[in-house]
Image 1: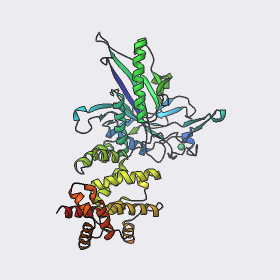
Image 2 (image 1 turned 90 degrees about the vertical axis):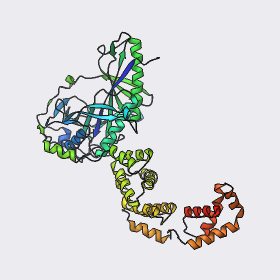
Image 3 (image 1 turned 45 degrees about the horizontal axis):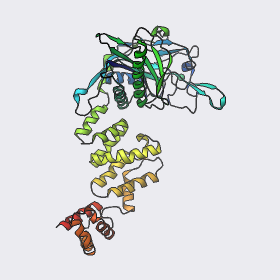
Image 4 (image 1 turned 180 degrees about the vertical axis):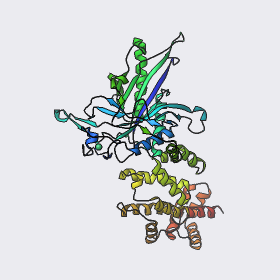
Length: 500
Ligand SMILES: [Zn+2]
């Protein structure tokens, strides 16, 4: 194809599990416990007759924060509706959702324009954000030739927020960018942990093509809803595949919108293809009606203003601060912000304590991140607190101990504790026990340097002749003479002495 004669049109529906202790309409825990199925249930979320739901106000508060951060209008009055369908993981045979009166609508999220390129910013409109309860999980075990199907209702009734974009996205990479932006927004608001492996963040994509004919007419291919994409990478791949597939089908059959009903297709990540699942229901198939067990929810202006004022700092604002005030590289900023607000907060505390952004960033993005991963821990559960790491690094930036010594202290701290919070006093203890403090005995250093020069005149000549690494053996000799000297200082002094 010489020139692309079509536009790709994509709208995304993102489901994010809200970070509440309890479910949306009952007091059951929302903890992810696949190892103990059906232990977090009660008559309300099991849908037993006579059990009445009561709305979790905290879920609405988190959802409204999201609506505000996405520039939506918050409705003064919002309503709960029943969405009827039958499926084994839905014990009531209806899902409590929001139909024509969602709590928020009409917002936007800007994508693109990273770095200095502001011209590339594109505004993606948000149609609505609404709240609903999650269904349970069907588990099919087909090992050993026996088909064994079970259902785990622990997840039933967990609060979900559905964020529906307008069909404003124009490519697979842009869709991924939108998702990354949205994930970061939700993480920094603290409303969802966005854990895709545990299903806290899920995405469906509506994709079709607008074809521009030679006659100036535009036609559209049927909209396909893509499902089962469990990572942002897979969303990108699935959309990419679907665009090519729709173009080929259109070339072969000439099918355009109106010829065919909306279709749902799944993504097979192993084969890298989408496959037809079912024809998409129309909303009228769900027979929505207002849930008679739940009241209208009224929100006051004062409540909304209070939430708006208290919105936490966004990742974008932190990015700008780290860049302009701390002078961090784009890479470091990206790694830090990608870990979420708790990690970023930890970094800022360490940075303040040691007064050196680069040193703090290096430790956070290398040592700390590595150890969190090997231990499978989140920063808020890490045994080393920010005050202790900040204190340790302040000893390095203050020239009291070397970076190498700091690494020794750090690994000893991690070795000797099992979960207890480590204090700056323990850092002091190790520095003194191991005698790690840098020796600042100028006379001893000068004498050792003179001795090294006398012992290795050839190396000194090589260095003067331009061989920078000729100083290596001299540094080693001086370090042996003056235990506890800072190798960087020894190198600088040797170089200065050789050049004078
Ligand atoms: Zn329950």
